[in-house]
Image (cartoon, rainbow, N blue to C red; front, side, top):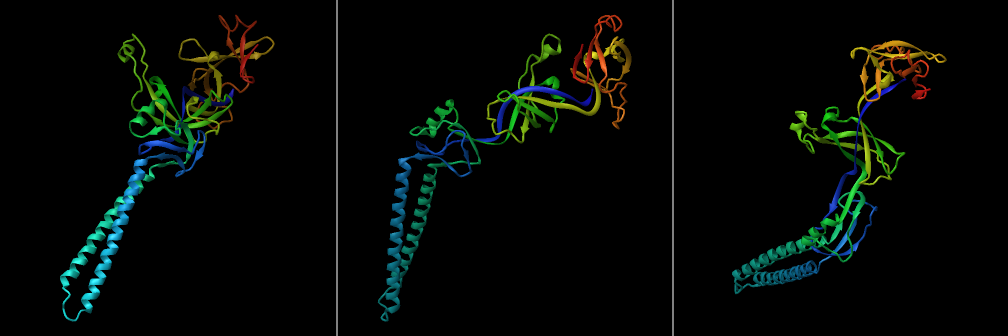
Length: 364
């Protein structure tokens, strides 16, 4: 058959968002409001939770009173300073001592500093109180929701609830990824930006394109490597490979099972034969048996050159009209090959099994 030859490495993994964040309130308290639900789309800055904390309310009110008192004290000091200065400049007898005016000026400065400190304290209290309103840190979808009105959050209570999952998790689902484990025997074939095809157990008819965006430098697991080296066992070392799905289907959800097929080799426009059709007499040179007469099943032996090979197909050259830099194939697209013959093609001519390139399978 004429077509594109590919070699793949397959592995299964779990679908994940490319980026996500877990909502973790910065203060303690109880949840007063939950304003989002699982699956909801949110924008950065949208309110997701409101937390009740009476201590913060009292701190804000106390800071507000202190600021108001400090502002009143400053206003009073300025009024006294103005009156003293007016009296000083209006006095022609020299009875008003300038030192008393200076003392009032100092009092104004002290009161002004007190207002600044009170303002800072109030601003800090308000900023801390603003943490009662928890907002989304990014655009995305709510992929996990464990927040309930009345539940305690923050501190030890938050840690205790971690086993039941994140309080709220928001993920950007416009790009997703699958992390698969590739065995050490195949990891050398994997490269950055390599093409991949991803299928999904939940949607058997869905197939998406992806590419490799990350290859681990250290193995995820390891077996008895020394035993494997000595022939007494097999190594189970695998390496994590991240595959990006740049345009995921809207139906996909994090946690779904995904099967990834990584294309490690691709050759366009070649002639291929099934591995089962390949014959050899010495293990170094190869040939195939081509059916020359469909009625008598007579065959003709043709020598072929193996250009590339995977578990199912062998590239034996380029088509005659191709400009590719490889030997021309002695076979043409559509020819029928004998792929089994017992002791030889002659011995099985009565009922051979053929490979029909038109149908992609065996021909009776």
